[in-house]
Image (cartoon, rainbow, N blue to C red; front, side, top):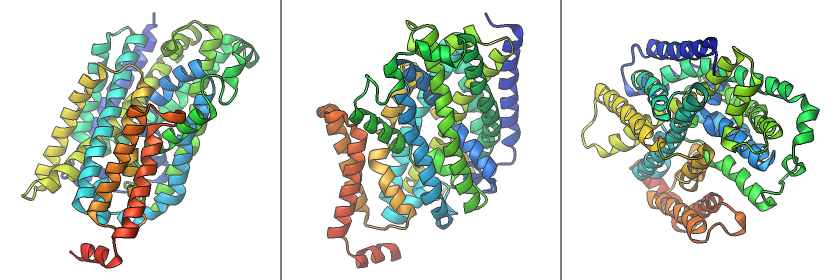
Length: 468
């Protein structure tokens, strides 16, 4: 049973975040302000908001669960995500100067592949975001039920209802200001949880003495080398330049701020994944027969002192809310700017665009609550959601950022090849050689895009398309 002070800390956090979000929602007049605010954020803010956006329930509770089951191999697999962020900082962020007027991925894709590129990016972005929002909202219900004794449904309604209100009203401005605060809390709370848990277990040596040897080796007994490499590539490619992360490349005040913030975020993720993974190891050392899903709750309830419990629970709520609000805002921008605007025959006024975006935010949030009821494993649903993105979007989007141009049918063909290749490999052939279908889909997408453009599109055709 939690102490009153722990409940008070969590309640103060929720009220404070709601107040900050509502404060930031003032004065928003159009979709551009709703999507990218004033494009004046410094590197530390980009670092904090990007880190808070990608650190969700899957990379925290899900990581502890998988490390409990498989060992440290899951930490190393997640470092594929860290490597991706570092590569984006070095090779993609410096190229964003040419896309400073974009407010969504569709604004970049339309330059390279025409309206079809914009529409497909909008559909893929919305599907990915809804899946990830559902995973985070499901984790939110789990956190409230497990840590606070509130029923899962009421936990979902309380946590999700809070963020739906301020994200709907405030857009990216509300998201950024709350994420900066949330990042500070989560960066403090989870390391504190690990320190107190290790102390409770008797120190590092005592923990290591209780861990099976295969949990401390790569790839261990649970995965083959091929399965590990495949999982590493899945985390590396699955969330590459997804809508909320690319949005962070558009809100910085200049390219240098964007690149630095992204690099710092990638570097920060390396020790963060190690910390959350090691929580799973400590739980395994203390209670080997524990349900892996309960690794973090078990430590919070048994190893942490009064007061620290409230901070850690607030940190975990931060983790889930920050990721959910980022994807919720990105989903509404993608739907409005990349699906509604190109399909609607008449020009929307600034007020109409803003109203559509707010309406989509509200309905996407409600839809995520419904989806969350069916969520079982947060990390598994993240990997499933990646299938709506990487096989169709990663390579064409990077190419578009670098200035690549081709005819729309070439992109549509490559997207179809990526999706079909992924589906056949994963669901018909059942992942031969333990290679994930997502990786095969990305290869099929890249190969077909290159070959179709090289052999069937001339430079004059591309020039004609651009002039038209």
